[in-house]
Image 1: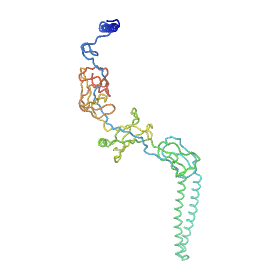
Image 2: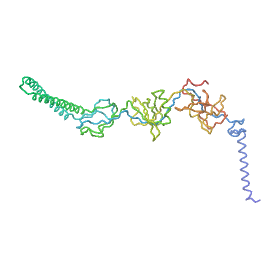
Image 3: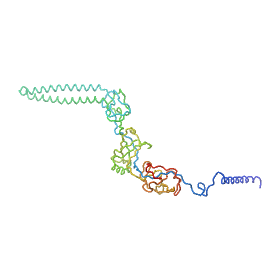
Image 4: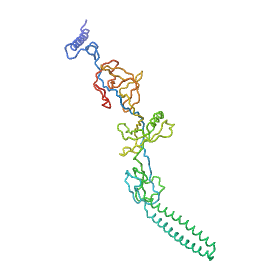
Length: 395
């Protein structure tokens, strides 16, 4: 064998010897422990070490049965304030965004022309009243003369008709005076409802007309305020049953991320028909909104509480879904995991009711589920306390 052929063989042999020496150093008295008979990840006796898990007990507590929906805050009253007379806008008496009460002064139209019209109507009324009084005096004289046959009965009848004519004109004059006085009162534009004013659409000095479509400003009632939302028609039987039990069903309004509860109110009314296009039923909830948390046209998440019944509950994070249905991993007293099929009920606030499959106080696994199997040993590293500490099972 030539030297060129023996050189590669020597290199291969050297690599094999180095690998054997390295393996012996790792499995001998070195720092790296040898694997047990069960292979890597098992103890010296070949058993799998306990799986660390986080658990929570099943507790019996009140569980609110809720319907969730998207809603929109809607003013109970929304008014566009328009002038009822034509004239120059003399003064604006509100700040944009200000809260006003019904009857508060908002703006004033120049009243001078309307005062003149009222004075004209009152002057004409006085003139006609004087004519009426004179006609009555003449009528009385003619009646006295008619008794002595100094005037004819026809003259008396003509004068009586003239008095009735003046009396009718008196009523017309009174109506004209009332109309002029009303027009003068309309120069003071007041808030028709309580609420929050928006941005004004006209400035002082402009000529405003009663026919202006935009008006002067809008007012939206915010205290109280309503929220309109829709529920699927499949939830109608539960809703009607809950309404029969309690006419004042609680309703909660939450922000878009459902992290903060904005307000609490009650169900106020139910629409009289189902929308066939969407298969939903519209409802209105009423909120006092004293702190103005809800704003007109604001989008909110609505939670309508239908019932508040006692139930055995667990965190919904413990529920698993398989080919055989829903199940949980329950931990025995000897810290052994057992697959437990369960039948679930209503859920709310991150907890779900368990109708069958668990007993109060049993522990279910929340974290570490991906490493569990039937009969596996576990190490409980954390036990979540129940919602009510008084209901917590004894250790």
